[in-house]
Image 1 (cartoon, rainbow, N blue to C red):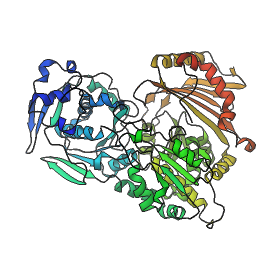
Image 2: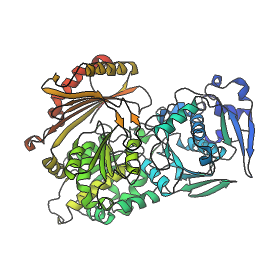
Image 3: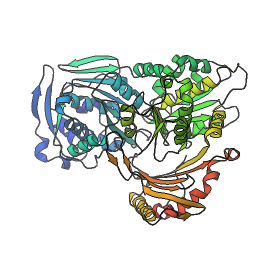
Image 4: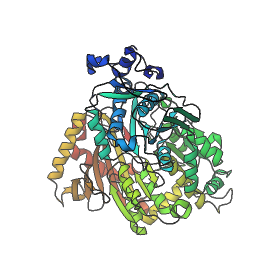
Length: 607
């Protein structure tokens, strides 16, 4: 296959038969990475009743360190050389072989460009490494929370999820993959570190010589001892949600002639779930869905549900006659944005309000909330709910895997991250549709006794009611995307120097410092320590300034600046967040010298 050719599923069939097929897999873009002698040697190492397993030569490729959300690079990187195959082989090699052999695993993804080709590569490697069965979502499309649900419901050994989450898709955009373990949560660091170790020494790919599997039809295909079951992407997840929520309560709201909603799937994976769940099951009108046809490139958009990238939905919700409720979800369906008519709910407020209201209207929570947790950068609104309800509370680093340990130990029911991630312990991933259904449940419960045509309780009413009881945590996040890594790193080093020279009592503008540190977390369940999780300045009035570098994109560095201030004066709860936070924002920008180090005068996204 020529180096410039787009990989097709047929490229990866018949590895033992001819040298050209080996070269197309192992060295399509850069043959120098595979020693010449290896390019012509393919050894048959096993034979079953239906297929042979061959060792395809390869060599380590740099840059395969798996992060909090898996491995993400440009699509062209994954589709070239043996990049994907090396990582998947390293995953299988890193797992205990006595557990891997004959195991059942899941394969799903967000439907982005290259997923179809990647799925066939993964299936051949799974068979070649002794996996007994792969449950594959129809067309390899399954949202991340549904993947977690299926892994748990079927007691699978784990699952591979092909997604770069909220990042753009397409030939020149992003691609990603991650491994979720048997409890349905992202693999912990001991597993991802082990995978990385194998990527540095991998020399052979164990490939099964099986044909591509038709993933377009639900059913089972067998090759000797290896089985591929194509499963419906929606059914098992919808069943779980029906056990979590009171669907009849939600239907009573969506069937009202005086209530309208708008759900934006952003041409991403939840488009496959929107009609089956919101329309077919809960009775919403099909016109209340937008951008609900999944596309490999997300319609050319950026599937990140925030005020910048979900602009089309925001325009609908901030005009006269807007629907009472609006929501959006991201590329792989684990993030969400909640809007009311001319009103935005911050993710920090969203999880706090769900925690405060959920027991009354969500059956899954009716027996009591075990505990609450948030990521460190998320505002302290949830802390106040936990304190008022006498619930155990946890502050963790960013990354859903930190919540998973707490859930498995029975200590956590609801958690959230300011990066539009909200969820419960029904799965071990954040869950965009879960958050939407939670808000619809709250609205339905608040309006169950309001007659049609009466004054409905709105999203903004619920927010103001919450602030009146708990106070308002004004919060904003500034994202500076695609910064030069060197300058961003230098800025973080500078901030560390500021921390070192800023003892308790240091004055910053009108604020007095309580403490400043580089956040470190000791897991209360397994004792593991996560250090250097974010630089924070906490003031005596509870206000905070936080800086983090994010690596969830495929190129460059994203600088995230978080600003928070608590306000208990009801007269000030209606202020615009940017106005309320302006003094702190000024202090943060001057203290960090962000413009000097990064060259950025304005953020890419303000939340």
